[in-house]
Length: 416
Image (cartoon, rainbow, N blue to C red):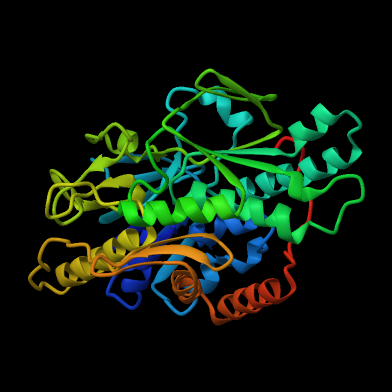
C-alpha cells in the first residue's frame, strides 16, 4: 500500500512544529511555503529598528528539516485547495494529500483603509522589516540634509499606530535608536530631538495584559520619551502624516501595528470564518465535516475552555502543531486519538526597551529588569539553531555594553 501523504501549508511556528512532530512517521510529508526560510516573528521589530540583521532571526526551512528524510520541502505559492479531490493547487501543478494541515498565518488589516498600507507599512516578514528600517534610517538622513525647521521636524517625527506588544516594542526600539544608538552620528541634527508618538484607540497600552502591567509599560514608555495618545483612533493617514481624531500631526514615518487579518485559507477551504478571517475549527483543530483537514495558528479560530479565542501568539501555534502531529501519528498507527486540544499558557511577555519589560505568568506579574532578562532568555531559547542563539546573544551583549546598534544598513528600494 502507498504511504499516506500529509501536506503542510506554511512553515511558520505551527506548520514547522507539525513537521518536526511528523519526522520519521510512516507517511510522506510535504511542507509548502512561498519563502525558503522560517522566520522568528517576535524579533522582527528588532530588524526593523536596526537592532538585528535578518539572518539572525531566520533559518532556511530545508536546513531545519534536513534530518527528517520523510519530509520534503516545496518552495511555491498556494493558489487554492480542492477538498473533494484532495489536492493543493500551486503555481505550476497540483499536490495530492490524504491529510492536510493549513498554517498560513496572518496579514495586515487596515480596517477598511487599505490605501493606508503604502504609507503606513506593517510588520509581518523580512521584506517589511527591511523596508521599515530603510524608512526610519532615511528619515534621519533627510532630517540631516533639511534646511527648513518644519521640514526637519517632520522627518524626525515617527508615529506607531497600535499599542499592542508589537506597537509598544516598536515605539520603544525607535526611541532607543534615536536617543542612544544614533546620538553621536550626525552633525546638523540631534537625534534625541526625534518625536516618537504611539497611538492607541483603546484606553490603555498592552490591553491584553493586566492593568498593573499596562501601567508599568506606560511608565517605561514615558521614560523613553515616547508620547502615548490613548482613546482616539487615527482617522486619516497619508504621505505627509496622520490625523488623530481632529489633530493633524506631520510625520514622515508611520508604522502600522494596529490589526491583523487571517490569510485567505477560509476562502480556499470554503469554510466558516469570523470577522478577522479566522477559520472556525473543532476541538481537535480539524475543519468541521472534514476530519482530515486541520487549521492552526493565526489562521484558526480556536477557543479556550471559557469559549474565548486563543491569542495569535507563537506558543499557541507551536502547541497546536505538536498536537496535530501526535493526532496524525495515532491515526497512522491505528491508536486512539489524543483528547481535544488544550492550550497551556506559560505566560506572556513584552519588552519596552533596555531593562524594561512586562511579564504575566498568571500567578506572578513582573516588570522592569527581571522581566527584561526573562524576555531575552525566552526569545533566545526559542530561536532555531545554536548559531542563531549565540549570535543574537553576543549581539545583544555588545549593544548593551557599547550602546551601539549593529545593523544600521540602508538597503532595499524606495518603494518599500
